Length: 159
Image 1 (spheres, rainbow, N blue to C red):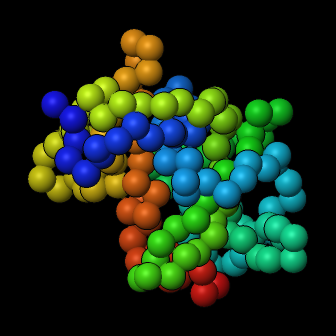
Image 2 (cartoon, rainbow, N blue to C red; image 1 turned 180 degrees about the vertical axis):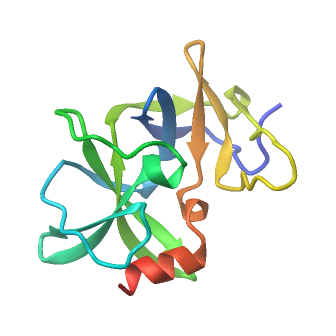
Image 3 (cartoon, rainbow, N blue to C red; image 1 turned 60 degrees about the horizontal axis):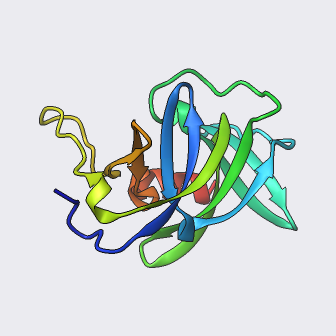
């Protein structure tokens, strides 16, 4: 049983947060950067690590581990920033997603993607497009547009 709305083979960028593998549609990924100097911004949510200068533009950097309730990302040689395009209220916003490491780009057939798990009624899993299978392991396919609420993005982008 494949997920409704995913009808063609798509490419996903896989990345690690702790020991879990997540994936983003490559069409949402602008570039991958080595970890760089992140300038902290006061009075922002814990998961916002700060901002970076990307060719003259200010780009907010989000710690994906903190956003998902994990411990903060520790800087290693593999730590990177995945620069993504988020659709917010019809406008494109650029964000940096801090990840432990980037793995690879994989192609997934619709048949290899299972629906997102429904875990109780209070846990919002709308940001999970589905569970893909790579080799014998599950990969959580994220809908990056839904990982953050409009209110969270408005707070971050207008800071």
